[in-house]
Length: 406
Image 1 (tube, helix red, strand yellow):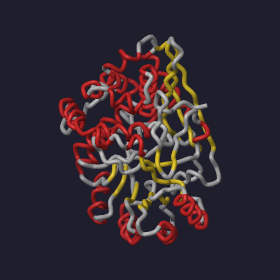
Image 2: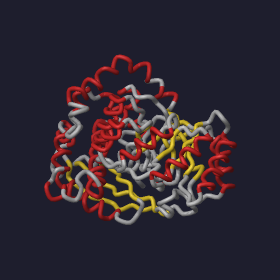
Image 3: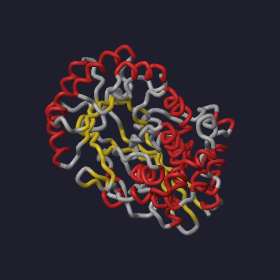
Image 4: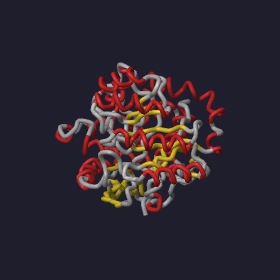
């Protein structure tokens, strides 16, 4: 039974140009943390990610949601969590502040993720293993599929979870081989050209075969120059991604994305405003076969559904610390399975939680193991930081979702 509830406003200035992009040039990596403690002293830790200001507002909203869980048993909560999450998201006064976006959605992410962490700790399992041990019906019961029924009914969700079970063994090798990563930190926006060059060399030496560069400069020639540096250093076989963090208007994106095609990008990420689905469709059609990746700033499953219906997303980057936590992440992943689009999460959690979710997506859903973003700047603040060796995430073995902060 959950006997104690608290939140923590955790902020970590990182400086030195780390984490910078074309719009967010001086980020303070921060977590709105929900802590749910049961009578046995087990604590579930749930994260939502922000860049500093407003983190306290997310914590206050999380307290509002979390109070609904006091005195309840985690097994009872998770047995029908999808209905509970819908009830919380539809609380009439708080819903007006969204719906399903902004501070209230981030708060729901924090609380939801704390529930999943406590459930895994109660079962004594790492989250990936808990997910794999649940039946398809049990997983589906944790999901709020409202507004998705035109593409994903409850019965379809159970079927999508059931069908891959017979072939799981062929995909379980990833547990010993590890899940491939890619290096996001080679090319933060404020890094000099020389830093980008040296970081690429270090990433290659560390075993990475994929890396990402921040673009979106006022002068497109700077973006092109830096992109050429990454391609030159990494070589023709490396996967190179570029990320504009929504900086361009659609006319600008049409111009610069066509020019970036010369470096053969694996994807172009967040080229324009994340709510402009039709704009992304126009761009995707114009620059094909170059693919777009999006999702870092998409707040809910409904907008992801619309992107998938529009057929303009080559990769979906749903983030469990931005949408309403693990449950909504799984709902989006099921839609991606239905539409045949890979899930490559954005890792606002620094990969701590997502290392579990991608293992389930691959083994449990049969989604391709493309790779998982790696950002190392907060690893010293976690009790059990991710282990990346030779460019590969090593499978976590500790009970829970790896989200406990020191």
